[in-house]
Structure formats: C-alpha cells, structure tokens
Image (cartoon, rainbow, N blue to C red; front, side, top):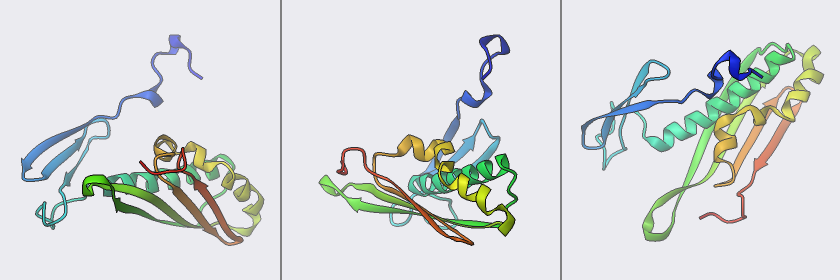
Length: 169
C-alpha cells in the first residue's frame, strides 16, 4: 500500500465523463480519464436509434460484464494461468415499478472460459474470489440480484449476489 509520501493512489483517481448534448436524447460521451469517446442515445421511439450508440442501461450492463471478466483474468494472471479462450454475455433485466418507471430487476453475467487441464487447481482457486476484484458489481450489489455463471472445462461455477434487504425498491 503506498504511503502518503508516495503521492496519491493512482487506483483512486476519479473517472470523468463529459456529455455533450447533440439534440433529442443524443449525447457524445467523452471519457476524459481514458481518452476516448462514445455516442449515446435512447432507443426508438425516444431516441433516433441506429446508427447512434448505447443507452445508459447498456453501458451498465457492459461495464459489469467487462469488469467481472477482467477480474477473472486478473486473478488468473496472479496465479499464472494462461487463458486459452474467453467470452462473456451480460444481460440486464428490466421491470416497471410505480408510475410505470423502468428499473433494473436483475443482472446476469455468463462467462465461458477455457484453460489447460494442468491449471485446473489454480483456476478453481480463482473461482472462489475473483468477483471481489470487480469494482462495478461490488459497488452496485444489493440493489438487484446479480447472478454470475462461469462455464469452464470441469463444469460450472455459479454465484448469486442477492438484493440487500430481500426486496426490490
């Protein structure tokens, strides 16, 4: 852990996104901290649809899927397990609540990974705690159920991050 004499912790740097309104529900999001940009829009009928980019819920879905997958890679790198194949499908479920407002009712992250058989024991050690490294799901957990499934050569690992108080909203 860096001391104060070492300066600020780079892992705690703020993430900054600037949104520039282009009209309607269309915005260009500039990721200042990562030097990139993305066009965002609501789907039709509110937004203009294609060729515009994703809406906020899609970014949440992608962020959670990416973060969990990267966390698995991080853990496997720590125990020197090379990944042969890796893919992820993230799905966010929505529901209507009071006043017909839409809310996230659940998130499913489905990861498929292949590693060599000689790395089975080290791989299985990572399955027990790789989710702890994901800043996104650890930050949003408790608001809605998050289910994580990892398909691997020796079976499936399943973990559910439940709603904090047992009810949504």
